[in-house]
Image (cartoon, rainbow, N blue to C red; front, side):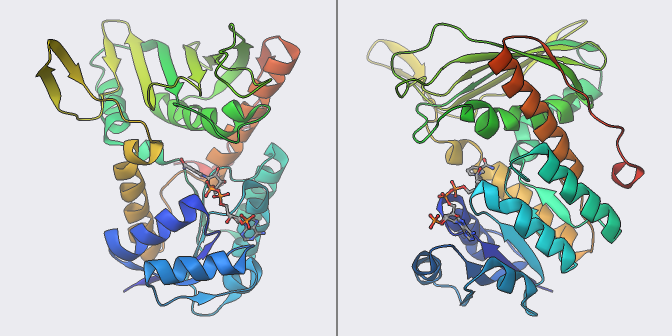
Length: 336
Ligand code: NAP
């Protein structure tokens, strides 16, 4: 059986997802596309050489009878509308992050999905599918380093074109907020944001870097350095300090060189390369579970919790204080 997917949003990531669904993975076929710019949607169909119909609106695509499942990869502020429409149509929907741009918007999706009565929504938090993060989680679960006490993390991009305001938190740190609570199986209770001396190499007026300090329900302390104009590479770090040892996120494989009186290895510069395998695993698992009528990935509830936590980080930054993070009790619908 083949999952017939409709893709809303054929920008940068929409195009790469169309390619992986059409050529890299098995079990899915892109049969419909839509973009605010119809010519761009047509260009995606032509350049990928797929047999897909271009729809004028996302709503028409979602309701098309030959579309089994929806992939939302449009601009963030449109996500809520398209996810709610997919739930109303009773169709599985994979939504790139963010699930919605506000915690209230995410909550509306959660409520609509519960009212529908069956899980349909998966959020694109692909780090959970990275082999390195999966190995780190396994290490924690096996009690190899004792109970985790502290996490030291870094999210570094070479540059952040188009970033403004608090996007380092709302666009990038959301990945850390999701993967770290998944790693520890715990939610956050407070956030603080410290603003170090800002680099001269960021766009004018933009604070960079940030240090985000989180506390979890069991008192684990997490520090995340967010440095989105670090220039040297795309570098994701995570060290878990436990009672009897430490565990580090593995470095991506690369050739080590002894040459010209140097011992060196490369550092990736593009997030697409760093997480290409994670994206592929994420979508293959989504295709397989959707064809089985199941939904196992990051849920609408996870999207909501990340939005609440990210809002608290933004508030902590603006107000220069520790902000409590109040996550409502997880509804039974989303319990494992
Ligand atoms: P992008 O290149 O700007 O693409 C977004 C596309 O959505 C554009 O083609 C835009 O058209 C289209 N669009 C806007 N409003 C629409 C509407 N009402 N209906 C249909 N299409 C509409 O952005 P991107 O980098 O691909 O990012 C898309 C989403 O993926 C974002 O939410 C982003 O946060 C997420 N993302 C996730 C990851 C990850 O690591 N998981 C990485 C990158 C991006 P116009 O250009 O004509 O406005």
